[in-house]
Image (cartoon, rainbow, N blue to C red):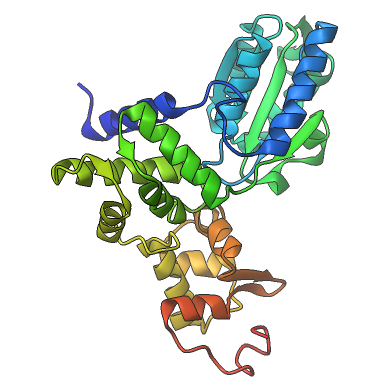
Length: 339
């Protein structure tokens, strides 16, 4: 029996899969990365080789997993998907890699969360195509070296700084995925609408795009909610009016801030006078994990210019005060960090 939460997660995954582009031609945005990857892939195919190991980093929902699947398809290769936390032991890594075929791609999401032991075993696998396995313990222990199929590792991370230098340096190419423009998000919403059989006009896609935090995953999630309201109201075409109504019901404002974003800013303003304040303190006051604050909330708030990182901690900017309609403190508050 499938629980409601598991069923919801499965449906969400199926929804995202149905909207996932399968070629660079269908993939909207990230033009420089697509151009460079095309050159990388074509050159490797002409040489009859696997492509170099690739590291993709950027905020959640920008398309790292999608790009990895497109790379595999363009190379005509199989792809095995896993994540850093899922590879707990060296045996787990060995089981995965030894079952790959020549030319296959291993995609590791959240690669920054690999354990140190697993990471060190990965080095010779990436560089020399061998897997070192230690058999036995103590003085009688010995190392067995297994030859591996030629494979490409594609790593994805939201926190590049957490990758060790030795691991980072073993990737042949490193690409940073940028936030999308409203125009690109609008095109993604329209494409998703066509796939789902939803009729949406330019004003509707633009309204959703403006509130999608410059992130395709968020845009598609909002499209689902707008679609639900449109169906309940019997409206066949999603326009700006129905989109705005649905977004208001979700308490998402005109620039995409959700209630939790506004609450975080207000916690910083009310409890810490806008900062500077450390992320650990913010997380404790906000009843959230520091990693969640850094990976989920901060990127977009910083992109909008509402939050700044300083050597002494995070600071709420005047733009955020204005957006929240809160009086900005005097210049001498916070030892001048607001200036």
